[in-house]
Length: 263
Length: 199
Image (cartoon, rainbow over all chains, first blue to last red; front, side, top):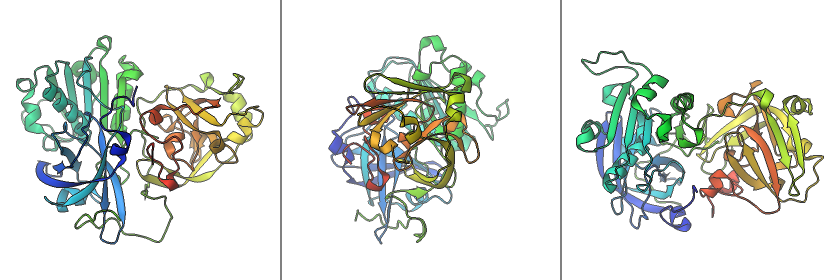
């Protein structure tokens, strides 16, 4: 059941707590990972999100949801934020928000788009752009738990310089035995690459994914159009709808956060 | 007031539209759902209301289209904090669909093609507050927005407005749906910020 065995009691997950930025890692020219310290954090599952609440000096406040990028390390959480030009929150979080600054945070949120280390089914992860964030949390949770579940990750990005966590992903099987990583490019390919850039197709998911009869759990995260196309393609090549879990985020001024899968 | 984030300005505050707390205006229409989009043929489509005593009221597509139609223009509010103002739909009021139904139920559990469910108090479906809609913005409702038909309950967070709706079960006791089992609110009033259970 979706709501079962989530870390933290309800009141604990709904309470706003003050976290502070303790470190920053640049992922690309326009994205950075924020390492936050949230005292008393109850822990979370890979794929879950947090709500951030930002408040201006005049009392105006706004919230956004962001996917957690890694398993919890004690009270430390990691989010990766993509700067969206003209966005209300993501330019602040990627350019102004500094080490030592507070932010209000609550969570973890979401009990459906999650992977648990006790899950043994093969897993297919399909990421579009910054949709990689919650899927990377699953890869990292698998590593942290020493899980032997076979994982395949297909990641579609515009250009080679848009790939988050690039060194970690390129380390591939030497770091994560049983994890296959396929990177696809839609705008520009790496040097010496022989095929032109293009969008993912059903045949790519056949080649880089699992046969439907292996009954993998498929997690798809990215912009709306990407998720719509990939989920349809997975159904078309024979994967059962109930084994395809999606998380979509629209372009609607919503910052880079991956919102709850709703509506 | 919350803890101030140093240097955070936020978007310019306007005296324009009044929004529920925590919402901002979206110009486009984000698509969010938990899995692949079910493809439902109109010829195979049915909508069923089942009472607490098991009586079924059923409409196929032609029968549904013969019912009196309304064109509400409403604001919609998603729990992911976007609000879209002035959306125009066409469909059948739940007052019409429930008009001939004998029930003393207080709750409704909405079912969709694809398996989605959501629960809400029956009172929120009555008195001109809810519709089963099949057109959006003058055109047939696209599959990714819930076509052939979706529920529209604009005064509640939009996850209550189930896409690909296929029926409603009327219940004496509240029974939780998909997101509600995962911790989201049983009613979901955006003006009260009822996002999660306990809010």
